[in-house]
Amino acid sequence: MNRKTFLTGITGLVAASTWAASGMALMAQSGEPIKIGEINHYKRLAAFAEPYKKGIELALEEINAEGGVLDRPLEFIFRDDQGDPGEAIKIAEELMTSEGAAMITGSILSN
Image: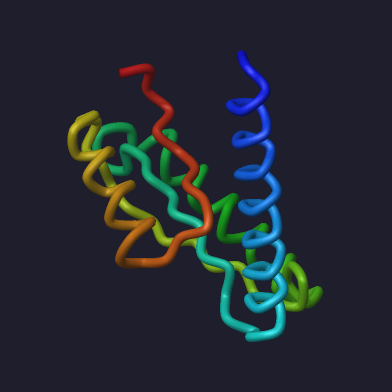
C-alpha cells in the first residue's frame, strides 16, 4: 500500500465516522424509534421461531419500559423469509431502504 492510498483511506474513515456520529446525534434527539429488522423462518420453523419472537417481544417491552436506548424506543420489524435465501436478501434490502432499519437480525438457517 502506498502513502497516497493509505491517506485516502484514513481520510475516508474519518469522514465516515464524523458523518455517522452527527447522524446518531440527530437520531438521538428526534425520539424516533430505533428500528431493527428481524428476518426468520416463521412458517417453516414455527416450533423454534414463535418462542424466539415472543422472547424478543418480551425483551422489547422491558427495554422500552425503562426508556429504550438513547432515550428512544426500540421497534422490531418481523418478516418471514420462508427459508428462501433469495427472499431473505430481498427482505433485508427492503428493511434497510424502505423501513429505515438500523440493523438486521435473524435468518438462523445456514443457507
